[in-house]
Amino acid sequence: MQLNLTADGTTLTAIFLGELDHHACPDARERIDMKLNGGIYNKLIFDFRGLTFMDSSAIALVMGRYKYMSVLNGKVYVVTGDAKMKKILVLAGLDRYVTILDN
Image (cartoon, rainbow, N blue to C red; front, side, top):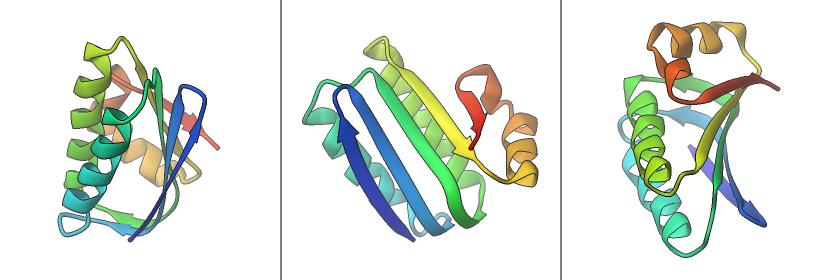
């Protein structure tokens, strides 16, 4: 898994490439949290368009950052270009907490 973090004002974007599974999530969580702790962000975007695979730990990663951002009155967004991935996220109930966007 490759993770690129970009900051634009109060928006932090996490761009993922490859596979996001239980092996990759701890590193991603640590890197995102370090970046969130180092700035003032009110919007966190997970860009999953470059993922080829994800498991339930990816959903846990998003939910954990949702809880973090909720304390800051921030918003979390997930961008996916894959209808199947979006369906999985919705079936998991993630859309009740974060905004899921197509592209």
